[in-house]
Amino acid sequence: MGTEQQKVAVVTGASSGIGAATARRLAAEGFSVVLTARRTDRIEALAKEIGGRAHTLDVTDRAAVDAFAATLDQVDILVNNAGGAIGAESVEKGDPADWLAMYQVNVLGVLNVTQALLPALRASGDGTVLILSSTAGLAAYEGGGGYVAAKHATHTIAATLRLELVGEPIRVIEIAPGMVKSEGFAVTRFRGDEAKAEAVYAGVSHPLTSEDIADTVAWAVTRPSHVNIDLLVVRPRAQASNYKVHRD
Ligand SMILES: NC(=O)c1ccc[n+]([C@@H]2O[C@H](COP(=O)([O-])OP(=O)(O)OC[C@H]3O[C@@H](n4cnc5c(N)ncnc54)[C@H](OP(=O)(O)O)[C@@H]3O)[C@@H](O)[C@H]2O)c1
Image (cartoon, rainbow, N blue to C red; front, side, top):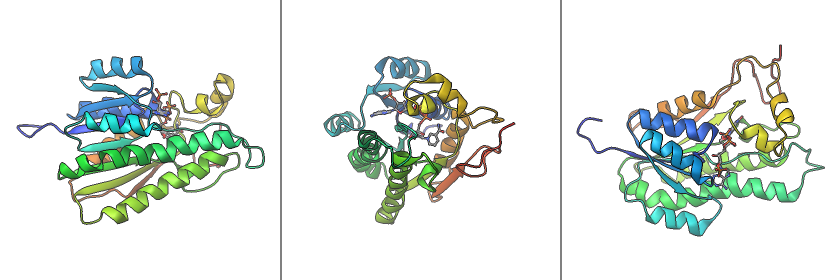
């Protein structure tokens, strides 16, 4: 980055999958990366590898998020990535506790971290809030249940925040991935059942990888400051909609 001050990027959920790949990629692009997640050992190891900083953080814990924000003296980019799905039951069979947990991480988690870091992003004079939603936030699918509902809310946070911040030096970018074969997503959705998780991708030629999404994050945040990528929908070639997936 020449003589310019190094920009600071905070990545939530950087212990696995898309968040870890994003932390790695942003470090390679020259950012000083602050990695956060609940699994300290993982973020500490990755921070060491990429020359970043690790901070253990549960994004659903508002007091912890505020305490984290107080440790930062500069934030230029916030990547709200922490999230996930729990269960694939129909609306009729869904467990309200799962719905609540998904709302807490995918919606209130984004709200908590964004609210806490907005003053620093504003103070940077050129801030970016990036929100990882999902194609589940744009259209329903059977068995999507509480995840579809939560990610629709995540999508709406991005849209609302962009309206509210217009005129300020802060971009609001939403990236909505389709099928990504990440480290933990399907395993979490099926509560640790590896066979069910693997079946999600069965016969699909080249689902997206975490690195593919990290690539779109890096591209979106490195556009010139006046360019706001409002919404980027990214799917593998083998997927034409949430439920139309080609399997060999
Ligand atoms: N994979 C897909 O097909 C797909 C598609 C569209 C969108 N997405 C979205 O992409 C994001 C990343 O998912 P992924 O596929 O990379 O899954 P993943 O490998 O399971 O990673 C999820 C990350 O979120 C973190 N996390 C979960 N709950 C958290 C909490 N309460 N506080 C802080 N961190 C938390 C996890 O870290 P700890 O467990 O260490 O806290 C982990 O680093 C999620 O928002 C997901 O909904 C995924």
